[in-house]
Length: 353
Image (cartoon, rainbow, N blue to C red; front, side, top):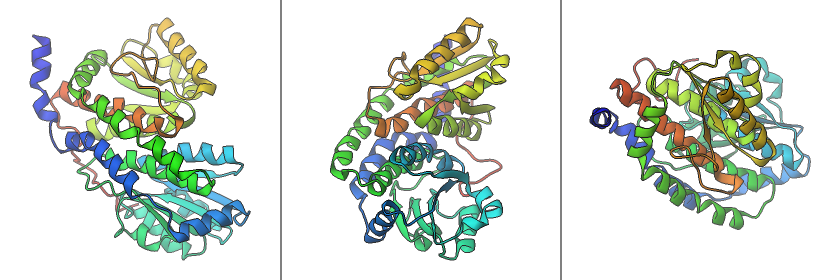
């Protein structure tokens, strides 16, 4: 009877937001096919590798900002020292960085957000800007020195396909900047969309199971390390945006510094297994949460459905990691009979600071 009641609520979530989620594999395929290396981008990459930039700044807002975590770690691995800062802080407190010796990698899915428009106005072409955005007609695309387009298509509300395609485009950008083999990367990335398609094909069972797992919770935490911080940050954001439900994303290490005290049967923690260097630490946190009577689920290769992800190359694991969280946004909406992803106070593009 409970299962029947839950299934009856699926009608409220079968709208534009769900269609965007299910369209993600197609969007990823289209993005990969359209990625290229324009001459302006190649020139910036050569200048970077030759020591022509003193600073590398990674910036964005919302999910665009969180998508930069894998870029941050990759550039550090390559030997650079990038700084990652929200655009809203950059334009008011870090103006000296608008300098010819600075490379700015700016991500904005719309390319029209208030902060990104202000950045471009303040910069006045002094710092080199590489823009990652969804449309060639956006302000960012027109004003940046070089552009990587995601071409994800129109999106109705909460970021989903523009987020995963931005992750793909940023991985491509890393390869260009660090002089990696683009053909090898392209072949690896081709595996992303069939794996995403396979996971999303069971969306109804995933939503049903998450509705059961999350029944009765009042607080939701998403924790992880390394490149999983992208899904952690974006995931908490889209839960709040889609469902008006309180959720917080943070590093697994930070969770032990305070929020661990909140553990109870009303608090649920999603622990992302993540990359090899810190996977054991994340698994230990999962065990400690459960030992203290908390509710927690692992998301990764060693998890149970609907949290289980296939073994994947590191380059596109962040794309798959966000999929279970998207299912959670649908499950929370179905539980309360709410249309997920419908804006009531905000809008798709933030036009005021």
